[in-house]
Image 1 (cartoon, rainbow, N blue to C red):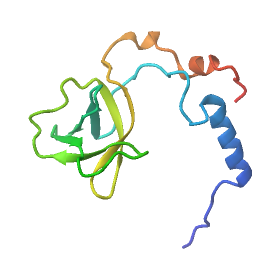
Image 2: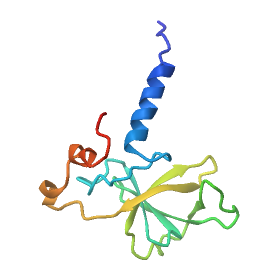
Image 3: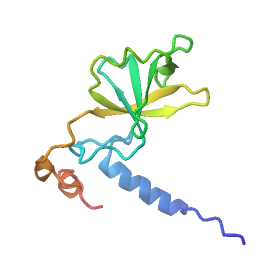
Length: 145
């Protein structure tokens, strides 16, 4: 049995791009923060770092095992960012991890940081005080989405 190959039309792609540009910057970054995390990430593997971003700590939430990644001396920084490689010594994790990190994995098993977000206590009861997505979008100058 064969299924047809489907993809959005060029018009649909233009509309989607225009919608994204209305709520983000030309670099597709959200201008107004959405607010605090409402729950811990569902990802099995969580990455954390500190303000200096010299070390990354990868933690498997099921097995509770951690792996430390350090800045690679072998590869120079590029536009993609600094490369981190696994380090056998987990005894020196980031001094005070204050940031969640979103990373990009590379074929050589190194990683680069894509973006970071504050590591907040997500077990709080002040969820009622956090703005909803609709309230955040209402702050944008153009709400015609």
